[in-house]
Length: 136
Image 1 (cartoon, rainbow, N blue to C red):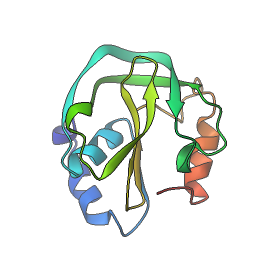
Image 2: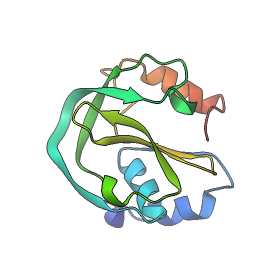
Image 3: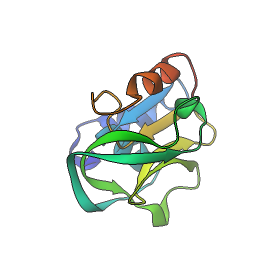
Protein backbone atom coordinates (compact mmCIF):
# COMPACT_ATOMS: atom_id res chain seq x y z
CA UNK A 1 0.00 0.00 0.00
CA UNK A 2 1.13 3.61 -0.39
CA UNK A 3 1.14 3.89 3.42
CA UNK A 4 3.87 1.22 3.49
CA UNK A 5 5.81 2.57 0.49
CA UNK A 6 8.35 4.63 2.40
CA UNK A 7 8.39 8.28 1.36
CA UNK A 8 6.59 7.82 -1.97
CA UNK A 9 3.54 9.91 -1.08
CA UNK A 10 5.66 12.70 0.41
CA UNK A 11 7.92 12.77 -2.67
CA UNK A 12 4.89 13.09 -4.94
CA UNK A 13 3.48 15.92 -2.81
CA UNK A 14 6.85 17.71 -2.88
CA UNK A 15 7.51 17.42 -6.63
CA UNK A 16 3.96 17.74 -8.02
CA UNK A 17 3.85 20.89 -10.11
CA UNK A 18 7.66 21.08 -10.24
CA UNK A 19 8.42 18.13 -12.51
CA UNK A 20 6.21 15.74 -14.51
CA UNK A 21 5.26 12.63 -12.53
CA UNK A 22 4.13 9.24 -13.83
CA UNK A 23 3.16 6.68 -11.20
CA UNK A 24 3.03 3.00 -12.20
CA UNK A 25 1.06 0.43 -10.16
CA UNK A 26 1.96 1.26 -6.53
CA UNK A 27 3.15 4.64 -7.85
CA UNK A 28 -0.30 5.18 -9.40
CA UNK A 29 -1.91 4.39 -6.06
CA UNK A 30 0.56 6.70 -4.30
CA UNK A 31 -0.33 9.54 -6.70
CA UNK A 32 -3.99 9.07 -5.82
CA UNK A 33 -3.32 9.00 -2.07
CA UNK A 34 -1.05 12.07 -2.28
CA UNK A 35 -4.07 14.10 -3.40
CA UNK A 36 -6.59 12.56 -0.99
CA UNK A 37 -7.64 9.33 -2.70
CA UNK A 38 -8.42 6.05 -0.98
CA UNK A 39 -7.09 2.57 -1.73
CA UNK A 40 -9.46 -0.41 -1.57
CA UNK A 41 -9.30 -4.10 -2.46
CA UNK A 42 -9.78 -4.78 -6.15
CA UNK A 43 -12.78 -6.77 -7.31
CA UNK A 44 -10.39 -9.62 -8.11
CA UNK A 45 -6.68 -10.35 -7.79
CA UNK A 46 -4.77 -9.52 -10.95
CA UNK A 47 -1.25 -10.85 -10.53
CA UNK A 48 0.39 -11.47 -13.89
CA UNK A 49 -2.89 -11.31 -15.77
CA UNK A 50 -3.82 -9.21 -18.78
CA UNK A 51 -6.90 -7.08 -19.39
CA UNK A 52 -8.18 -4.89 -22.16
CA UNK A 53 -7.68 -1.22 -21.27
CA UNK A 54 -10.04 1.47 -22.59
CA UNK A 55 -8.72 5.03 -22.56
CA UNK A 56 -9.49 8.62 -23.55
CA UNK A 57 -6.74 9.00 -26.18
CA UNK A 58 -5.14 11.98 -24.44
CA UNK A 59 -1.58 12.61 -23.15
CA UNK A 60 -0.08 9.19 -22.27
CA UNK A 61 -2.64 7.44 -24.47
CA UNK A 62 -2.27 9.63 -27.56
CA UNK A 63 -2.16 7.56 -30.78
CA UNK A 64 -2.56 4.25 -28.91
CA UNK A 65 -5.07 1.58 -29.94
CA UNK A 66 -8.31 1.64 -27.95
CA UNK A 67 -8.61 -0.76 -26.31
CA UNK A 68 -5.21 -2.39 -25.85
CA UNK A 69 -4.03 -5.34 -23.78
CA UNK A 70 -2.03 -4.59 -20.64
CA UNK A 71 -0.48 -6.59 -17.83
CA UNK A 72 -1.72 -6.16 -14.28
CA UNK A 73 -0.03 -7.12 -11.00
CA UNK A 74 -2.20 -5.83 -8.16
CA UNK A 75 -4.84 -6.60 -5.56
CA UNK A 76 -5.62 -2.98 -4.61
CA UNK A 77 -7.11 -0.09 -6.61
CA UNK A 78 -8.11 3.54 -6.20
CA UNK A 79 -11.67 3.91 -4.93
CA UNK A 80 -13.77 5.32 -7.74
CA UNK A 81 -16.47 6.52 -5.31
CA UNK A 82 -14.26 9.17 -3.72
CA UNK A 83 -11.61 9.90 -6.33
CA UNK A 84 -10.41 13.47 -5.64
CA UNK A 85 -11.98 16.11 -7.90
CA UNK A 86 -8.53 17.17 -9.11
CA UNK A 87 -8.33 13.91 -11.13
CA UNK A 88 -10.01 12.66 -14.25
CA UNK A 89 -10.11 8.98 -15.09
CA UNK A 90 -8.02 8.45 -18.21
CA UNK A 91 -8.27 4.66 -18.48
CA UNK A 92 -10.37 1.75 -17.24
CA UNK A 93 -10.10 -2.02 -17.42
CA UNK A 94 -12.60 -4.40 -18.94
CA UNK A 95 -13.70 -5.18 -15.35
CA UNK A 96 -14.32 -1.45 -14.74
CA UNK A 97 -11.42 -0.75 -12.38
CA UNK A 98 -9.59 2.58 -12.66
CA UNK A 99 -6.46 1.95 -14.74
CA UNK A 100 -5.38 5.55 -15.33
CA UNK A 101 -5.74 8.94 -13.66
CA UNK A 102 -4.69 12.39 -14.79
CA UNK A 103 -4.44 15.51 -12.65
CA UNK A 104 -6.55 18.27 -14.18
CA UNK A 105 -3.96 21.03 -13.62
CA UNK A 106 -0.55 19.48 -12.90
CA UNK A 107 1.66 17.19 -14.99
CA UNK A 108 0.83 14.21 -12.77
CA UNK A 109 -0.56 10.93 -14.08
CA UNK A 110 -0.77 7.34 -12.97
CA UNK A 111 -1.45 3.94 -14.51
CA UNK A 112 -2.39 0.86 -12.50
CA UNK A 113 -1.13 -1.58 -15.15
CA UNK A 114 2.50 -2.18 -16.14
CA UNK A 115 3.53 -0.46 -19.40
CA UNK A 116 7.03 -1.94 -19.07
CA UNK A 117 5.72 -5.52 -19.22
CA UNK A 118 6.35 -7.46 -22.41
CA UNK A 119 2.69 -8.52 -22.34
CA UNK A 120 1.49 -4.89 -22.51
CA UNK A 121 0.77 -4.31 -26.18
CA UNK A 122 1.85 -0.68 -26.49
CA UNK A 123 3.66 0.08 -23.25
CA UNK A 124 6.75 1.37 -25.03
CA UNK A 125 4.63 3.90 -26.92
CA UNK A 126 2.84 4.98 -23.73
CA UNK A 127 6.16 5.59 -21.96
CA UNK A 128 7.42 7.35 -25.08
CA UNK A 129 4.45 9.72 -24.90
CA UNK A 130 5.40 10.61 -21.32
CA UNK A 131 9.07 11.14 -22.22
CA UNK A 132 8.09 13.34 -25.20
CA UNK A 133 6.08 15.54 -22.87
CA UNK A 134 2.57 14.27 -23.63
CA UNK A 135 1.27 14.71 -20.11
CA UNK A 136 -1.27 16.85 -18.33
